[in-house]
Length: 246
Image 1: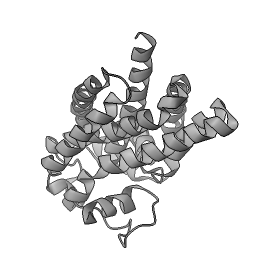
Image 2: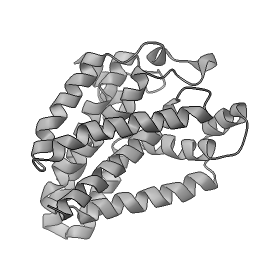
Image 3: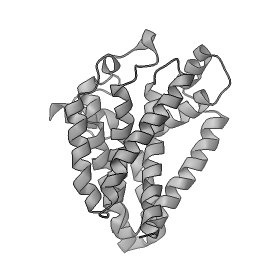
């Protein structure tokens, strides 16, 4: 419970515990990130469904999208944007890391997030409103599980500034528990939805192998944010696509 509260304090805006965001979380705390994702997604989708009944579909989609970002403190979106600036720039490795640490965002970040946000909103718009809570919760949790799977096999990309969280691997038992809990949640969406779990993890591991080539053989915290945002959008789009053909 202490590790979960610490994860909630670090990876969300929830005013819980006494854990300062300035202190890097350890590997155990990071392993509880998927549980935080499910909670954030459930709240975002649940309030989206409620607003659908009160204000209509447009407000429901906007609320589900906006709260997914706000409740996480925009942490993963910031990592996504930093990664876009660094990963897609034709610069040496040292300069790439410097760009990703820069708090300002450049053209790549703004352009690619505009594309990502458009796809994210389109996926939420295409979902049946009654499925918003479980779909958003499932996508948020799965995206975080899939991203963290890379931490089991890849090193941190900045050895000079490495945090303890990335020296130690996240406990595989906690990640396995989070993955197992996603299965019954997936069944609330559709009978085939649990099949999305291994597909998402495999896709994230493949993406990690591709991205590490631009980062000296490992991944940074920003890139994990990039994988989480992409994974959440891809999961929602996948659910929408299959629902349309079933």
